[in-house]
Length: 173
View 1 (cartoon, rainbow, N blue to C red):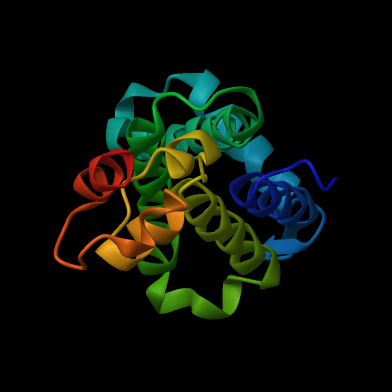
View 2: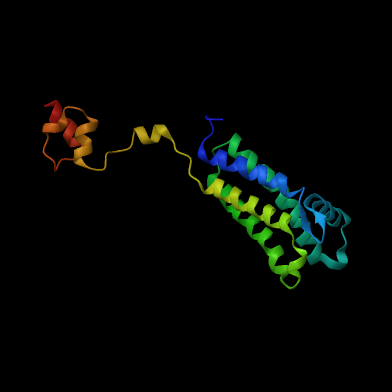
């Protein structure tokens, strides 16, 4: 696993935490997976007498599916980083709302919910972590003339006020 970058390692931790949360008691004695099933039933039932509730609980199904997609994206692509970051914030905020919706009945919220919420926070952190690109770092300009002299190897006799490119020209004359 040494070939994984930092965001992938954090993403793997998010996947593990997410999976564990489904086996823990999450709400009113029900395990996380049972809660997902209830949300799934609500989403597929299409009860239009409570459209707001239908949208809200369907959002949890979509957030869970999106979680899996975003976690997979850490291993499959490097494109769309800012879009993935935005979506991870959005599903994190939606997941947090469950706490506030149940603020009067906090005793019903159990450890599984908090573990599930933690998985979303960790996924957000994985997308927030910038992957290093060694090819860009190798081509980066030096930050000071002293570093320019070291980078170009024989430009140490160049005056300190010269930029890296000028130090290189100084050395070649």
